[in-house]
Length: 202
Picture 1 (cartoon, rainbow, N blue to C red):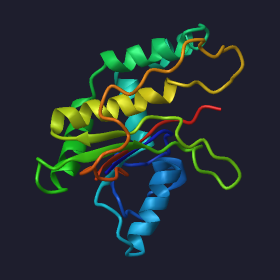
Picture 2: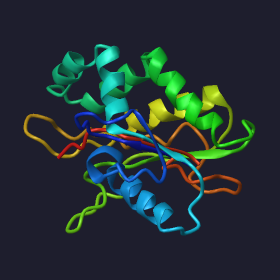
Picture 3: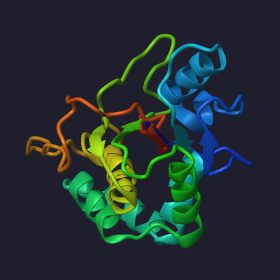
Picture 4: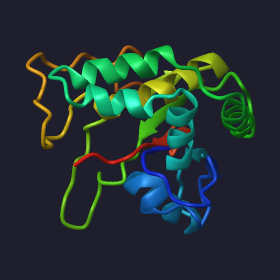
């Protein structure tokens, strides 16, 4: 399971072990932080690792998307534009190698995994935004994993939250291009697979 988070904290590693005590709401998202706590407690949590908010920020910065995102947020089709930017960009070499090293550490490279989102404003004590981003199941192989991590980050912009100056897109959200959110043989991504985090949008 791979857990992908969405907001940067200073000094945060791009990839963390699932049970790492440094995995918090701020760098691993609500789902990631909860799974880390369960794993440290010895409960039967599938193996995996976190792709932190720092990784998301590295990706956005390396692809030069910061200004393009700010500009797109002024448009009615902001979500579609920004997802397009993510689809065109490649992960930086160092980040790619770090994710693949963690993936290799899970064991047999032929295993099927899941890549799950873990937003920093997803599972809060008084608010919940669960299900706003995409989960990718039945992911197998390095190339598919890297694509799923990137697509998981892009899904942060699939259903934009209301914010000043941004209109909600009128068209319905598209289904995730990978496997459906149910099925056998998948692993939890906090990612046995990976959890991917990105910046929360309010």
